[in-house]
Amino acid sequence: MCDIKKEALLNKNKEIERTVSNAYDELRSFRTWLKWMCVDQSNAFSACLSWFVFILLAVIVPCLSHFLLARDDSDAAHSRPYDNVVQLSLSSVAALSFVCLSQFVKKYGLRRFLFLDKLCDESETVRRGYTEQLNSSLKILFIFVLPCFAVECAYKIWWYSSGGTRIPFLGNVIVSDTVACILELSSWLYRTVVFFLVCILFRLICYLQILRLQDFAQVFHVDSDVESVLREHLRIRRHLRIISHRYRSFILWALMLVTASQFASLLMTTRSTADLHIYESGELALCSVSLLAGLMILLRSATRITHKAQSVTCLAAKWHVCATIDSFDSTEADTPITRATSDHFPVCSEGSSDADDVGDEEDELDNTKFVHAYAYSTISFQKRQALVTYFENNRAGVTIYGFMLDRSSIHTIFGIELSLVLWLLGKTIGIS
Image (tube, rainbow, N blue to C red; front, side):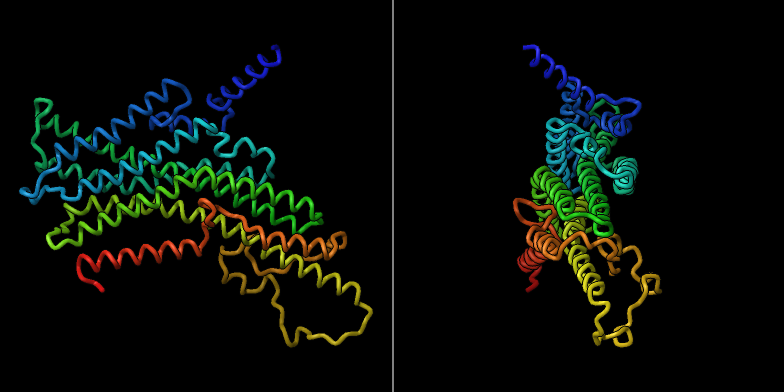
């Protein structure tokens, strides 16, 4: 009985440690920002407030805006014929993002979800790089959101100031328009930020795994045994599987919702009666840009980490070849053999000007440099070959229900989307 109480107390202390910010918490500013955005659910009061704000800004305000404020086609200067697509698109992705974020924080906690609890096991390079990326995540978020929000503000201010609505629900037209404008802008900002927040968190987690893979590449430059290399790779694969399991539903639903939104937009703008005036279709274009930017963050992060994880196979094969060449050179040094010398196959040095042409595309995983074989005498050929075979038959990366998200998958998605677009254009404007 005493042991049960101690275990319960220990679990409670762990819960407090992961939810309460302190002076040494890496997530202190992050948690503060989540509270200001009303998406923090660390306790019952915060959870209730978070759900209330979500229902208000993602459901009630868009409905009121569409059914009460959106003008009909009789007022051509202030009509909003695409408002239904804009409101449904933003609210749907915001609902998906909010529900997924709530489940992530409630089930795992923010520290565990961001793998900060495992960061103590990593090298100093990985810890420093991940901390810097964590601190700059909010800046990246606002880099995407603020330009679109500025355009949305300009449009809403013009729409209300030029007489877009005349519904004095507060007794005064000016006060009513001001309140309505603030609510609409708050709703747009809230829904967009929630969607981009989940996308940026996925990018942040993927960046950690890329740092770990780059740090893992160092094992091929030192005297490492095959077992330690295999154990580290299995640990990375396990973390990639965890990321895939957590985010697979969000990525799949985000892809479907954004695709549906774009096709609805394309269908409405290619009608014969459609008016593509900037004041009418500008908000639809802004919505499409925001959704596509968030989707690109997801797909680019997933394909990048998959590419880096699969580059380990190439690096291991190159390590195996260099070690084999070095072992043969050492054993046959006294045997006169006719070889193809550098006169036939000139070898450029690593510091040649060709390295400058590559730019930043090369790193520890993707490069064309030889692996210096100076400590491979302790690893036999059979062990190295077995390790390379393991890498070739166990591809790591981000998956969605078993389907690998790599560059080939992106090409497949693009092909399917293009086929649907051409089919839709053929039905609307007659493209065959």
